[in-house]
Amino acid sequence: MIVRVLLLLLLGLGTLAGGVWLDYQRFTATPVRMAEPTMVVAVERGSGLRQVAATLTARGLIRHPYYLLLLAYQRGDGARLKAGEFELTRGLSPGEVLDRFVSGRVIQYPIVLVEGWTFRQAVAAILANGRFGTDLADRSDESLMAALGHPGEHPEGRFFPDTYNFPRHTTGLEVLRRAYGRMEAVLAQEWQERAAGLPLKSPDEALILASIIEKETGLAAERPQIAGVFVRRLRAGMRLQTDPTVIYGMGARFDGNLRRADLREATPYNTYVIAGLPPTPIALPGRAAINAALHPADGDSLYFVARGDGGHVFSATLEGHNRAVSEFQLHK
Image (tube, rainbow, N blue to C red):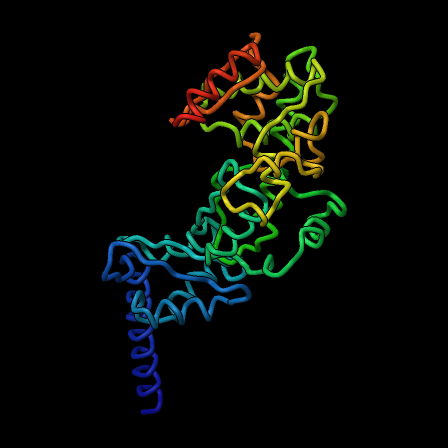
């Protein structure tokens, strides 16, 4: 009698085990349940496999967390999950979901640093993005540059303007670090390929000139012409006399109007007063402006004035320049 009971019990357990195994096999072969075509699932830093399985169960993607745990242990994925946000698409099997979590291909969010922005505008944009850390808040330029490993360096112009992509919760310092490294690489390459005979002693001087070109015109075709004017003036020992440097030197005092008194004010950035280049860049220059600074257009023009439509009139003589100023500035 006892033997018969044991046999029946073993048969029952075997049947149960077989049923569980078949159910597990169906689980691994059946796509996870998703009401929408895509879904974002966050794997928090420090989360273990159990927390991830519980999250998927709570959100209705799988019925039982235990099957996902078994599958992950079978595959050796237990300690291989990466932190971040992952996009899941309808039709993925549980194994393919684990593949996403193990791959590290997290969702990336863009941050745009715009050509011609100042360093402080770039910092404000990173803080306003909302997806990155707030570690840049309430920190001085000196503190930020020290944290980036460049203590004592002026930050203006040192960060390459471009669109960068980062996972959520990336620190603001990491965003700046990548932009700094990109500017170093671009500037080094452009300096290596520069035209011969330029009146520029270093890549830093090229960066300063590029930042001025960036602020003077947004027209790609004009950048080499603008660069040509500045390079010829530097060679001739003429002052650059460019308004954007004056405005930068005024800082928060600039109210949108540049007056004669402002052009006479002695600041390190007033190129109507100082000879040569200002001490630092005045904005973030893009690659086109850097290239223009190092490959200025040939010609004889020494002056230019804005036409009012985004372009400029170039003149070789002061007399011609004064006529252009009269036509496009004084009588507009």
